Structures are given as structure tokens and as C-alpha cells.
Image (cartoon, rainbow, N blue to C red; front, side):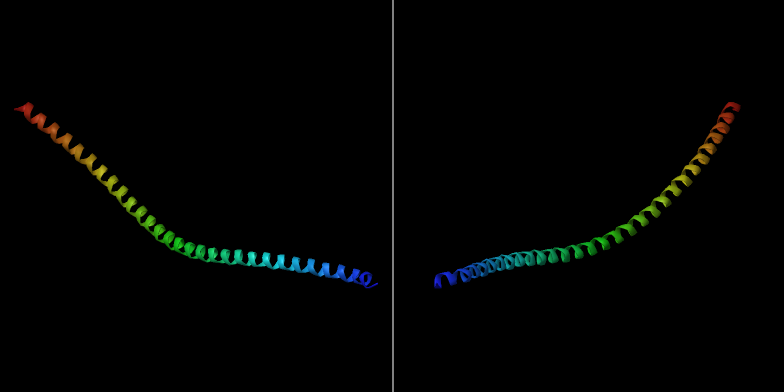
Length: 107
């Protein structure tokens, strides 16, 4: 009789052991996920710092680009001015050469 009365108890013991294994597996998975979460948090902190550094760099480069664009415009304006001045000089040269040719011909 005692063996038969232990039957339901043995089933309960097995259920408890199964639950204990399930619990241990769940704890192991939890620890793994917690570790991965910590690694992700560290990665995120590093990336946040990198993003801030890149943003600062971008701001500096944007300012340098604007300065370079302004310098380029100044250079283009100077080139246009010198080109116009060169045209005037070439016209004056042609006129002087023509006058010189006339002078030579008259001598």
C-alpha cells in the first residue's frame, strides 16, 4: 500500500524536478541576456561618444567648407577682374602697335 500511495508523490517530485530544471534554464538564459544587454549598453555609450565627436568634426568641416567657398568666390572675382583688365591691356597694346606701325611707315 505504501508504494501505491507514493505513486502520486513520485509524480509530484518529478514535476518539481522538471520545474527546477526549467527554472535553472530560465535563470541561465536571463543571465545570458543580461550580459548581452550590458554589452549593448557599453557599445551604445561608445557610439554616443563617437557620434558626438563626429558631430563636432562635421561642424568644423562645415565651417571650413563655407570659408573655402568664400575664398573661391573671391578668387573667381579676382580672375574675372584680371581677365577684363587683360583685355583692356591687349586692346591698348594693339592700339600702340598700330600707332607704332603708322609711325614706322611714315618715316
